[in-house]
Image 1 (cartoon, rainbow, N blue to C red):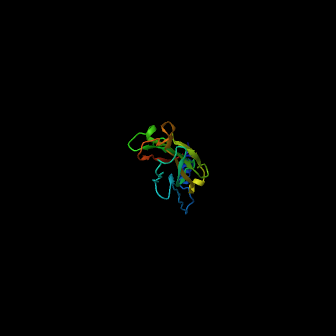
Image 2 (image 1 turned 90 degrees about the horizontal axis):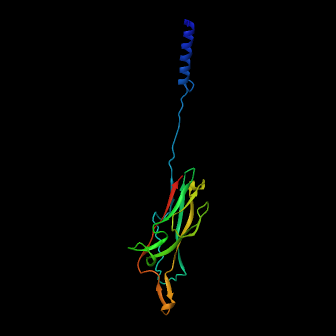
Image 3 (image 1 turned 45 degrees about the vertical axis):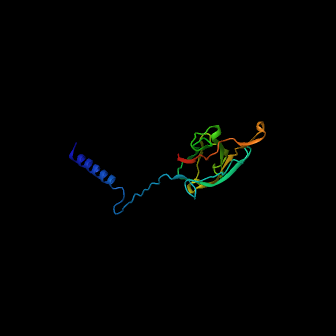
Length: 187
C-alpha cells in the first residue's frame, strides 16, 4: 500500500469516528428526558379499609326471608394498560360461622353479596362459595369507577309442624361472622 492511500484511509477513520461521537451539531446541547410511572391498582372506600356490616338479631327472621344491608360503595382505580383482575373472596365460603366453630349445619348462616356499577363492575346476588373473579380494563379505571356494595343474609326462624308448631331457630345462639375481601391484581 502506498503512503498516500494509507494517509487517506487513516483520515477517513478519524473523520468517521469523530462524526459518530458527536451526535449533535457543534455548539448545541441535548437533554435526554425520561420518567417511570409505577403500577397503582387498588380498591377503595372513603370510610376506610375495613367496613363493618351488621345484620343485627336474626332469631326472629323467618328462613324464607332475608335481611339486606347496604355496605356503601367500592371504588376501583388501576393504571395498568392491560387492566386488572378483581376477586371477591369469603373466608368461610359464603357463610357466617358461629364464633369458635368451623361452621357446619347448626353453626353457619348463608349470605350473598351484590355489586353495582358500570364498566363490568356489576355482580348479581352471589353466595361466595368460591372466589369470584372478573377481568376489567379501560381508561375509566385511571380515575376510578365506583359501584354500590350490598349483602343479604337468610333468616334462621322456623316452625316445626311435628312439634305442635313450636317456633325454633335453625342454628345455635351466638355471634356469627365472616370476612369478604376484594383484591385487585394488575395484569
